[in-house]
Length: 179
Image 1 (cartoon, rainbow, N blue to C red):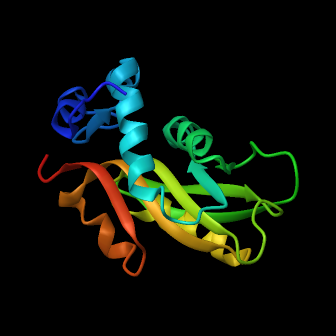
Image 2: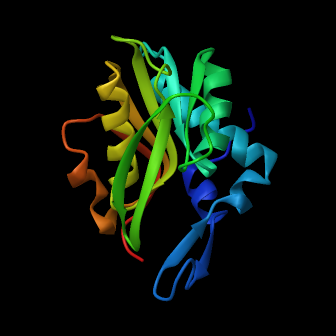
């Protein structure tokens, strides 16, 4: 791996003002992802944080969480579970609704995705208010899975999403402390 600092990763993320609606500053990770050494470094940092933790599966949240989660699952040699928007999964599923910083949304997961006692790492690209991650945790736990941790590429700490996830081990690679 080419050594890339977390600060370099942070600088490679661009801000998109007023997206998806006025007043929101969107953290666009596609500028990090398109740089092969930055993408590899980000996955390696996450891997190193969790390499000594027993993880059976990674649950990745649609859509950018799939990118990070799939690469990390490959690196950790474990299965991946897609957490999708409603209507995208073909088999029997469970459903959870949650609040966003700018509205509400829902996630679904196949009902057979997690077995009782499995250790699951939840992965998403970004934590803002924490609602999406909490919905994912609830679905995993409702199927008998254990949350081994929650990993984010980016955290917007000024939105206090960790408060909603108290009691879970959380790791964020890149943290923004103000807008």
